[in-house]
Length: 381
Ligand SMILES: [Mg+2]
Image 1 (cartoon, rainbow, N blue to C red):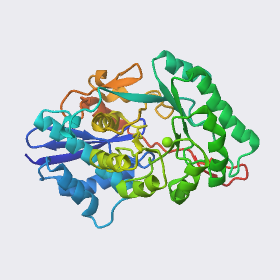
Image 2: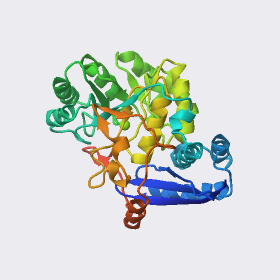
Image 3: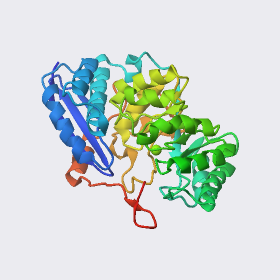
Image 4: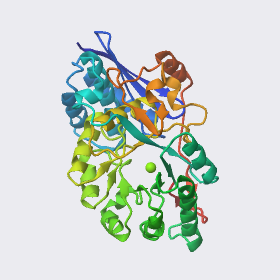
């Protein structure tokens, strides 16, 4: 069996899918994308496809090594995301070739279902209590929120109190038996994070995500020491070598994105690295159904898994939803805050190829907003 074609599809709301086909008629799907830079990753996939076409798709690890290292220059969001989507597609083909879901090839399921959380409040949160109540009503056991919009370099007392108030509003609806996670989204400077983390500790967040931008990761250890909250990071880290210093700094939760951090192959290894530090895996996944299926396959086979992000109803999606590109949305349905074990061969989903081809003809040009401080200077989004 040989790979005979690699195609990419730029589909709303902000995703890029790849389709890898073989001369045996097997097809694998992947989601190689950097949000806001999908076209750039598409070009990278095209270049990597020059190597893949003609190769045996079942040499997943060998291809990961060549795709990652063979171009001499390596790492970073664009190349790692291109490799990630292709890696997902190769695992999908492998599962279909062997007649088994990917988690069975990774050693078999270690759990029966995967706990997921829902987003609430959007980029600049409002009406939190109502949003959380709707998720609780739908059976969710955990939500995640930003709890702030733009943050000043040193937030005022009122700014910090606003973060606490929003988190408290969610906690009040959730009660003590459900969880709320706080995503600082790299908006906080080091001094801002030093103010916010201790202030929210009493509300018992499940995790506090990206308290610092990755380039300030060398200060994570000081932040971990300043408050008894589980610090999480990793959506903008791209491989196990990027995660090692974060783990050595004492983060409790790693959040690699299976569409950014080298795919199923590398996220699996990042989870194992985290396990040696007593840290937990919570894959980042505000993306589409292929990326979510890849995440779930890892979650099903990974002992130190905590919780899974998913994008149903997320504020980015507007008009196109996670389940729109599936022939049958049932495998990704959330029941009682969990997604059940994916049983079909490969990634366990059936991508609606016609819908994908149609959507690609419309395409998208999604970009994240660029925020400003009051004086007109750049503000982290
Ligand atoms: Mg995040």
